[in-house]
Amino acid sequence: MRPFKYTNAKDVSTATQLLTANPGGRFLAGGTNLLDLMKEDVERPNELIDISRLGLDQIKPIVTGTLKGGLSIGGLGKNTDAANHALVRQHYPLLTQAILAGASGQIRNMATNGGNLLQRTRCPYFYEVSMPCNKREPGTGCGAMEGINRLHAIFGWSDKCIAVYPSDMSVALAALDAVVRVRDAAGQERTIPFRDFHRLPGDTPEKDTNLAHGELITAIELPKNNFAEKSYYLKVRDRASYAFALVSVAAALEVANNRIVQARIAMGGVAHKPWRTLQAEQMLVGKEPTEANFKLAAEAAMAEAKPLEHNKYKVELGRRSIVRALQIAMDGKRS
Image (cartoon, rainbow, N blue to C red; front, side, top):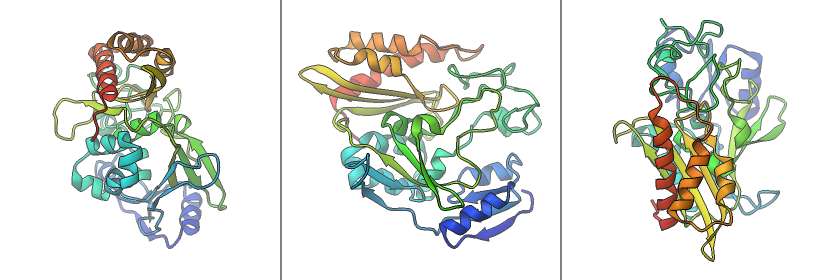
């Protein structure tokens, strides 16, 4: 690990101003991803600005604005608290399931909600500093493109990067149409719809999100919905204990009179960001919640997949996972 300056920020304004003024700095909250990257010499910040004591950890109903009736989750709250909060479990069980699928209890006790969104890829070529990686060092190439790409993307990749995004929590948030609230050094707040928060690699795979440097995630906001009774997070992985997803599916249904009123399907382990299958969702609206219709939706969801040499299995795995997740959601299985 390289030398760095440590600064303990006293308030949000100070934190955002310090980071904005230092292009080489990084926020430090739980540190469960950042510190590993520093130890591996992947990340090399010259300053860590500790934001862990700024508060911003409340979970509370939204009582005004366009998301009135929804739920606000503090950006610096711990994953454990979010997963186990009574309002989350009651109204957004999909989020609880995804967080609990994502890591050990020890990591959930340290990791923050905002930090979870900012996880970097677990691509082995990104972590191995002797290998070329456009995400780690732009312009050096993509080692995974011609290497072992069994774990890599089948949607939205470019010739610059085929890495996948690792967060389980974010897949559920994508399905729930979450909004990310951020604040900058001038004290100005803005909101980013979750579908626009993470980026596809394109020509700039080093940019994971659309956050500006110095902006701080203050809250994650969830709109009110009718998915609580019929939602499920399915994670398929190489081992049952705390492995990253080969494919995951966050599925949610609203059903009335044996017809699907609304559907949400988001996938993890398949792209550089949580992958919403909008065409499949639209296909299900107005249909009966049957296995046959779930299979048609799964076919539509995977139609544009572009697998690589070693990950063709993800196409069929994706189809089967979507059908299974929708079936379990329809059965009303809860965490």
